[in-house]
Image (cartoon, rainbow, N blue to C red; front, side, top):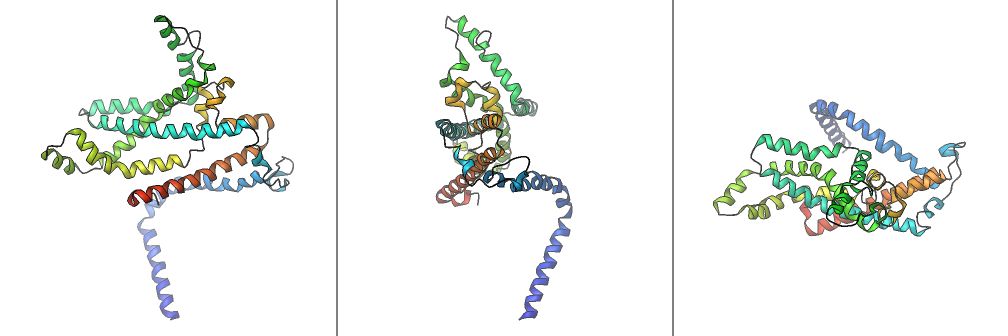
Amino acid sequence: MATSEFRHYSHRKSGFISTLNHNKWLLFMSAPAMLAVILFSYVPIFGVVLAFKKYNFTDGIFGSPWAGFDNFKYLFATRDAFNSTINTIYLNAVFIIFSLAGSVLVALLMMEVRSRRLTKAYQTALFFPYFISWVIVGYFVYALLNYDSGTINRLLGSVGQEAVQWYTKPQYWPVILVLVYMWKYVGYYSLIYMAGMLGIDKEYYEAAMIDGATKFQQIRKITLPLLMPLMTIMVLMQVGRIFFADFGLFYNVTQNSGALYSTTDVIDTYVFRTFRVLGDAGMATAAGFYQAICGLVLVYISNWCVRKVSPDDALF
């Protein structure tokens, strides 16, 4: 019995070594990315201990006294913290829905462009905003919404309407933030969905055209169903970060205007202001840990729902 187990172990070991030798160049090329993930995603996990400590620079991370769950209390101690949590979930959910619909629509339109030169020009124009810093985008938006000389207020004045103090009107900003987010990210996501569409076998469309299917019917019966697994993966990845707001969007585009906090303040900006005032690293770490745990739970719940509806489309 022991001999057969030894032979089985030796066979598995030799198979593992053979696989390594066969894929050594692929592993070599992926080594920098794997190293980056380990250094910036796994090594910092040890810093989570700060969430449970009353940190001071003299004693360091491990020498600082334990604080239990005291660092988490401030997240729920005021109405502002609760409001920022609701804003984070609500706005990120709206971003996910509209960016999915917008990027798929743009990808479908791009697939209908027959000129390769025009396709490359459109792709470049759509993808370019993704590389622009939120600081620059904030100035673009300010140039549009500035009360005294903003383009939007000038247009309103030209048709006899009064200028709007955009940076003191929180009710407009959920719509403004959605539009800015889509302008920046829809082009990027549309390229991902275009790549998925290019992988669909052309014979499906040829058979559909022979049967007399219209372009809309082809999209509804072929493109969208075959694109659904990719859409599911993208949505689940975004749901996992629904508690993590895009700090640059909510801080720079809104100009950190206090009058807008009721609709634009999110967990990240709330924690930033708290840390800037109090300088407590433990509280900031507790907020990050809270966001990560909630995101993990949401991913599992979302994946469970997907598995119940369509097991083949589930992420795991």
